Structure formats: structure tokens, C-alpha cells
Length: 140
Length: 368
Figure 1 (spheres, rainbow over the protein chains, first blue to last red):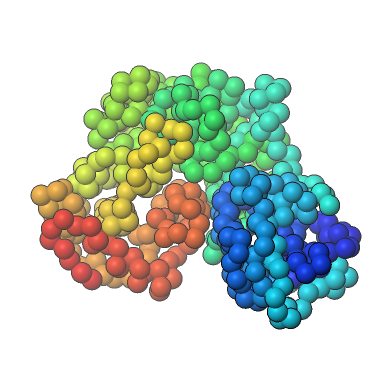
Figure 2: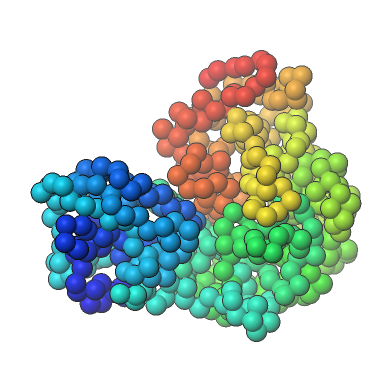
């Protein structure tokens, strides 16, 4: 589905940090959305949690840096990091080039029912359109 | 699941330039910040900084004929990193017509355009063409950052002014003749000469008038603080203004392994520059310790520090007299302590600056 100029696959879930999430059994894969990668810019440096790290819902677990900005990745649920994408650590441009494919970031294995409220693509559309309007109003 | 935003590199010709031999004046490089501001590249600015000067750079297949040891455009930079960054980040290439069109669309949020020459035999002629078009079609003041090695006559500078530039920049970069020679001249078998740069500076003042000439100086190339302050005073006495940069090691350049200057050194140089350029004090009033560090400004500086103004990026002004060329994160990675603030530092920033101002002094430590 397109929201504004950005692509959001229907089979994924989304959070308000512009991350996408894909449930795969007891694990969840996490990446940055098309909108997230575009608005952050070309990613130059990346820090991801190590495999085996216990993370808590909402906790900052990694960081990224573009030419002019720095920001963080957040854990969308409590659990253990069970996989980290070594490819993006070698070439962070993959996040910009293929955010829903080779640009995935890390996977969490759930060991708690604690999970943030995630959005379907329809819910994301409503939320993001409001955000874009708010942003446009601020830029006037 | 591999779709991505189609416009993430809208109109960018960086690869085509190499493949198809595109060069200035048909194409032009812009700073990453400018490309973002013109909507040609995605991205956002740390702390919501806003770029107010459109920085453009001439580009040729042969590159710059200078061999400056600290520069990202240097010819002999390793093949892996050659042309990848200049002043810390990538400079994407676009058609000049596209930049012109976008500049017109964004002229209300911008305050100035700066066109940088490089040392290439066609650069003077092409700069004149581009300044003329920018002046005719965009309602913004224009700076030309000239390549002095290509310029020999007063008339050459006169032509820039007639084409529509109101500010001339001369990148002397090194504060002493020895450092200039070492990193830009004979030391790197480069074409640039210290005396010639200062001659062009004097000619520039004669043509553009006092206050309309800027000199770029880079802190951290190996000069002492006293040498840098002496250079500030010399530039000021000639009627020009210093715009200050903090050395940043460009990967692959000859100085890639050299450390950036300490924040203490840079803060003292920012404050000294501000006080001298604004005629608040002069170099002869300031005191230096045996390590030639600036240990005493010779006056009460607390109010100036509290204003945060000395620590903002120094650059050419807009019509409002405020700095237009604010180069967000051109000297440091975003998120780290800022060498140059692209906005007025807030109270927390000022508090941090106070702690940095006298740090690293070998003797004569002061506190605010």
C-alpha cells in the first residue's frame, strides 16, 4: 500500500518509530520502513544489539547515523535478540536500498507477553497521514 | 519485499557523471545538506537545524588540480575513497538547470548561494556563466569561493562582481606560510602559493570592498593558537573577515590519521575570532602561555560566551546581516559535541561551552 509516496507492505505490522515488524512463529523480524529510511537519509553508521541480548519493550537497542542526523532503534517487545543482520552491518546502504528485504535489522525471540500496540497497514495509513499533515503545517 | 522510495536520489547524476563525462557548467555538485533542503535527497537534520545557504561546487572529470593534504577533493586520494566525501559528507551531482529551478522554489527559505570553484583551467569561465545565471534568475545574494591559483588580475575579480557576486571567499586554510607550503604547496607538490593567496585577498578587498571578503582558516593543521590569532588580526586589518573551520580528517586523504583539534583549542579560537572580527578587542591585548595557547583574552568575555554567538558557524551573511552559510554538521558528526553550532546555542550548550573554553590549557588555567 502507498501512503503518500512511500510503500508499506500489507503483510507487515508497524510501530510509531517507523519500524516494520514481521511475526515469524515465536520470533519477530524488525526493520525500518520505506518512510523511515527516506526521512532519515542515507545511513552511514549503524549500531545493532548483539545476538543473545535481553531487551525490554520500548528500550533503545541500537542507533543509526546519517550525514546530518542520529537516531535510535527500539525494541517493539520484551525478549531476546536471536538474530542480527550481518549484511547491513557491513553495508548500511542496504537499509535505504531494500528496507523490507535485505535491509532488515534484527530479530527478537519473545519470552514475555509484553508487547507494544502494533499497527496494521490500514491503521498506519491513518496515523501517518495525520503525522504528515502535522509536519506540513509546521513547515509553512 | 524490496520496494523502496523511488525518489531517494531524485535527479542525482553522480554515477552518470563518470559514465557519460558530464561536467560543469552543465552539472554541479551540492552539499548533502543543500540536496536535502532542495528536496532532492531524503534526510533530516539533527536538532532540527535548517540550512540557509545553498552550497554549490564545480565538478570536472579531471578533478581539482590542487593536491592539498587535508582535502577530500585531492587528486591522489586513495581510489577507494576518492571523491566520496568533501567536508565530511558526500556531495551529490545534479544538472545545473535542476538546481536552478529548485533554488527558485526555495528562495524564501534560503538566505544565500555560494558557488565554490576548484582549481581547474575552465573553472573561472564556468563560474562566471553560473553566477550570471544565478544572479539573473534567483533572488538571493551570491558568494563566489574563488580558486586564487587561477586568478591573476584585478579584472578577473571585477568580472565576478559584475556577474552578480557580492561576496568573495579566499580559502587560505592554513594559518602560517610553513603549514601552507607543507599541505598545499611544495610539500605536496601542489600548485598553490601563500603570497599569491594573500595578493588575491588584497585585490579582492579592493574590488569587493571591506567586509565583503572572507578568508577560510582551518584550526588544527598544526598551528599554535597564537599563530592562528595572529592570522585573524592580519585578515581583519586588511578589511576581510575570517570564517572558521575545524579540521576534520577526510578518510583516504593524506591527513586521514591526524586528529581533529581539541574542543578547548577550537572554542578559544572561535571566541578570539569573534572578538577580533567585531572590533571588540585585538590580538595584541590577548595573552598566550609558553605553549602559545591563548590563556587570557585580556578582557571580560563572560557576556559574549553567554550569548553563544561566537560559537555559531561563521559564514557569509544574508540580506539580514545574520550568518547565512551555517553548514550544519559540516565539521563534526551529528549527535557529538558540535564544533560549529548551525543555530544559536541554547543554555545547555552554553554551559557545556563554558566547560570547554579553557580545557587543555597547559598553564594559566582560567575558569568562567
